[in-house]
Amino acid sequence: MVLKKKPSDPWPTITGEYEVGNPESPVAVCTCGSHLHNADLIKAGAALAGPCKTENIGIEKMVANVISNPNIRFVLVTGMEVKGHITGQAVEAFTQSGIDKEGRIIGAKGAIPFIQNLTPEAIERWKNQVEAVMMLNTEDIGAIAGKVKELASKDPGALDVEPMAIEIK
Ligand code: LMR
Image 1 (tube, helix red, strand yellow):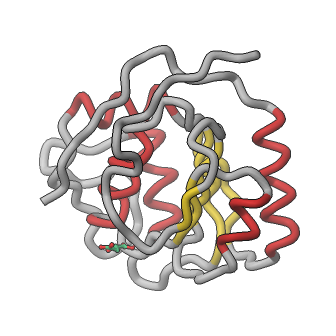
Image 2: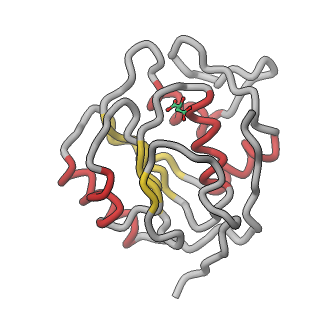
Image 3: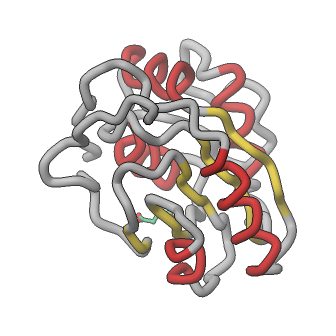
């Protein structure tokens, strides 16, 4: 049995248009601009599954819900890319490079990739905790569910830290 940690109570910390599954699962699914049948992804073993449309507040809320649960180690970035915002690419860039002094996600190509509500500690936690797994521009629910199962089978266990609960204004 790999290490498991108790997430924040309550968890998820931020409300939104997602479905919640097993809090001990290592996989969260970000479906970008697509509204998929999230229940199928939960059934496949995801801890969280839902859209993330904006490359600013959307990413902030997702980060808050992930770093409050150290069991989540993979963020599967899938669904159709959001035109203009280019949110999926922004998640990948954010995970790799974080933000610059002005709060801009380094390397993000979208219109307004400015992070305003995350402390350097929260960003560092995200980068240490999760790997962004890119599977953009598909809505094939069977293939996405298959990827959730594959990632769940590679569970490295929780990051050995306490959950970080943050507020998004
Ligand atoms: C998003 O990017 O998906 C968010 O703006 C949605 C929300 O809950 O604010």
